[in-house]
Length: 397
Image 1: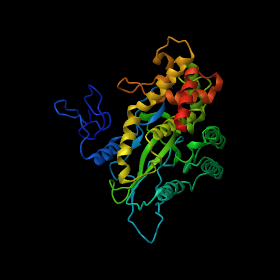
Image 2: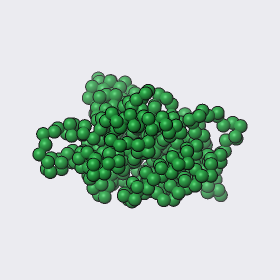
Image 3: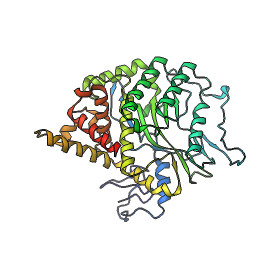
Image 4: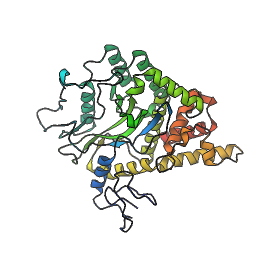
């Protein structure tokens, strides 16, 4: 069954579409994807908001689970978006600079970086054009950033194939430690280079109070109109400034979560980044499974593949398949009476995260397994080690 407005899958007994909020008329037949499939993808992207991300959630005074579904966002109005006409004699798109006196005043734990700028009316011929615009958007915001931070950003970009990094107001030593997380993971998984476009600080509304977020698909730029192909897409990891510019708060929150069993044991103020990279690796494994080489630039012929990818990631089917495979491997090697859910629960409480409908978010099991192995190696939970082994196999495949 599919929503007759945006075309997204509808679960049994849902009264509203979980993606666009459209009321579901059970008297109508919604068992087919509407014919205008391209428009369905566009509407799905437009109606998803910033809450629909893979996140590590932190509540008031303690760790809290937040709704996690899918990571796509596209602003449906023109506020904050830049418009450009094509100029065949000027191959590079100019990114407008905001005069210093017009910059909004920031609080103590806020950044000048805007991670969700969007562009339309841009000449996009190939992935190189998309990369250039991502870089320009990033660099245009760095004029007031410390040289020491810029140097760290440049090292991360060069060493790990990330298109743009914006850590402007972060403490220098803290930024170096974030770089070390990438160093260890990218050295162990060299095939994951080149897919992550952005690592950025992000000002986050307190209603969406997460530590860090993985956003697999963000529609960053389009051609002549919002619906004109090709689209330039970002894949990014976002760091909430309320925590990453307030290390003591971050340290306290993560330590409480780790000590309580909500996060894996020995979690540190830096390791939430490893959790998000676990989501990143899981998403790349899913791209492998769908035979999708890149989502950096979406052409007209790529729309159906993108729709399949969005649907799979949102429903968590591929994540569950990986977990079940790991569980069966474990049962072959061990005499166990544990159920699948009991087995997953040995990783951490957060590995058993549910959405607002009470359904398990299986990709959290993947990310927490990765987080656990990153922190504890051979001393990680057996379930974590088996899940990560399957993840590695899927990445190689």
